[in-house]
Image 1 (cartoon, rainbow, N blue to C red):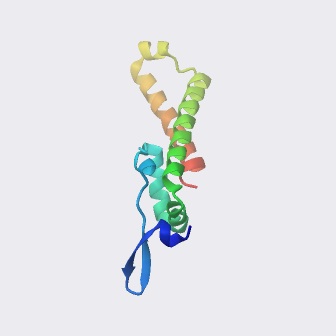
Image 2: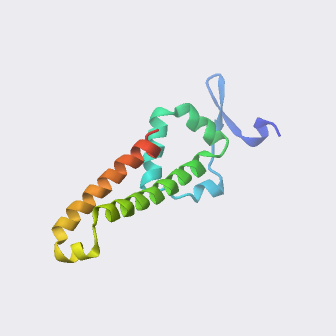
Length: 121
């Protein structure tokens, strides 16, 4: 199948530009925080890659996978840090403000790790 059968084109000056339309599967993809952050990064810093992946119908699935991986990684990191630092439900019951401070610190550190390893790469 040739590209002209796959895409509809519009004339812009002397050029034919493909009209890229999301497939029904891509339109169903709902991105969370991590997928949206990575999408913004890709659109600003990796335009050629985005164009290629979009033309091949892979961009939205890729973003959904990044979102899934980052969410799982965040949950895992937070749980591991809580355990290592002794942040328990007992602490939450006894000193809620301290618990909130420690959890906020853990979440911030987990976010920095995920940003460095998955989102802004």
